[in-house]
Structure formats: structure tokens, C-alpha cells
Image (cartoon, one colour):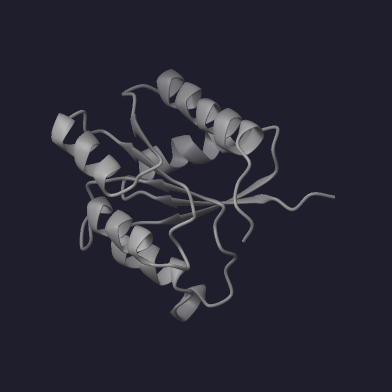
Length: 143
């Protein structure tokens, strides 16, 4: 039996986190979604600090840009600067359509940039597309 895909969602908006969770629950691929609310928690999770000491390393990170304490750009830079973490694909999933955010995300080595839709149907479609591409088509690096 295949192990579930481990997904880390870094999202401060509970509504967006719920929509992502709902979309992944309908997935054909077994997955385990972990949700953290900001960049500080994301780094604690990834570095297995404190309450995250026993978590599995994620196979995929879905990262919002605009968050309190430590924003997504800082998290992305820290992930890609860390030899142990940099191979984990990071999918920026944000409400920002600003060209500077797109450019900066790719300069920080994001694997893709997706603008969140404003409605439930659009979000469901995006999550299913992420699931299809990243969890069925792409071969992810080993943990």
C-alpha cells in the first residue's frame, strides 16, 4: 500500500484553508494535509521543532504570501536556502496578482505561482488541478 502524500498548507485565512482541505478530501490520491497559520509555524514544522518534532516531512508545500509574523516570501527564501528542505516543491497559492509578487516568488525559486480564485468552484478547480499535476503526474523527490 502506498503511503499518503504529505502536504503542508501555510495559510492564515481559515476559509481558504477549509476550501483547500475540502478539495483535497475529494482527491483520488491518499494525502495527509497539515495546516499552519503563518511563516513562523511553517518553519517550526519544517525544522521539526516543539510540537512538530514527530511530523513527517512534506512532499509538497502550498504557501500563501501575505501572512502575519513571517510572510511567504521569507518562508520561501528560508526553505530554498536550507539544503535539507530546498528539494521540497513549493507552490505559491495566494490572492496577489501583482507582477512583482510573481517575479519575486520565482526569483526565490518557487516551483509554481497560482492566484487564488474568489469563489468556491474556482478554488475547488485549482485544488483539483494542483492534486492532478503535483500528486499524479509529477514524480516527487523522496523524503
